[in-house]
Amino acid sequence: MEKITNPDFAKQQNNFIDELRSKGRSEATVIAYAKDIEQLLNFFSSRGTLRLQQTSIEDLESYKKHLQDNNYTPKSISRKINSTRTFYRYLLENTHIKDNPAEKLAHPKFETKPPRVLSEMEYRALRDVSRVDIRLYSIVELLLQTGIRIGELATLTLDDVRNTKDGINYIYIKASGSHPARKVPINKSAKKAIDEYLAIRPETEEDTLYVTKNGRPLLVRNIRTTIDKAFERAGIKNAKVNDLRNTFIAHHLSNGVSLVTVSKLVGHKRLSTTEKYLGLVDNNKPEAEKSLKDL
Image (cartoon, rainbow, N blue to C red; front, side, top):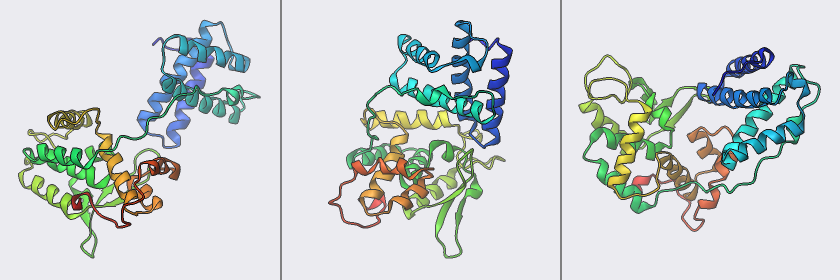
């Protein structure tokens, strides 16, 4: 994508990105916003627009149609509209524009697929094929039993595996971007899997919990690729790493764990994010907080 040539546009984009960073947004989020706004402003430049004060709802609708004509999916367009709205709110709050035309920009309609949750047969099969690799099994078990994000798992250190004075084991998830730090309890199954991995973990000066055979930190892409191959060996189709997190959420909700508790455990910023899993819950199951190993 071409860089922004209009000096005023480039200045406003840079200031907008600086503000996002000052608010603690994650670097991935900042990069996504930067690309979306760069695309928007380049579109305006191609139409001869010189000042953002000149843009109207008609200009934004033309941009939306431009995306549709270039085969962007409704979901991608919706995300770009969110970026556009956030950008225009910034412009209004900082008095760069007098009115906010983006408020009237409607999202395209699209169907949101429900979260993919592994069946009991699927997650048992995944565990079975993972047991041949102690590190992989530890990773799968930790993701499945805690619901943490793959990025959070990749940044865990040895010191992040802790226990309380009462002997309750937990992992400490550091603050990242707009996500605050939190403590996530780990059950006996997850703790055992971690301990078995630590017994064979390569000696290294790195304090990252999961490392390669050469003692270097195991990256997100390495973890994702390894689990994808395990899904394939287990005969599980159309599954992704995040489905382990989905499975944790849906399972605990179906077993009577409160919406608020589950939301805090997995680090959702909004309760509404957790609520979308309620449609997957089997209300006929007994209300008992069980771990996946009990099934």
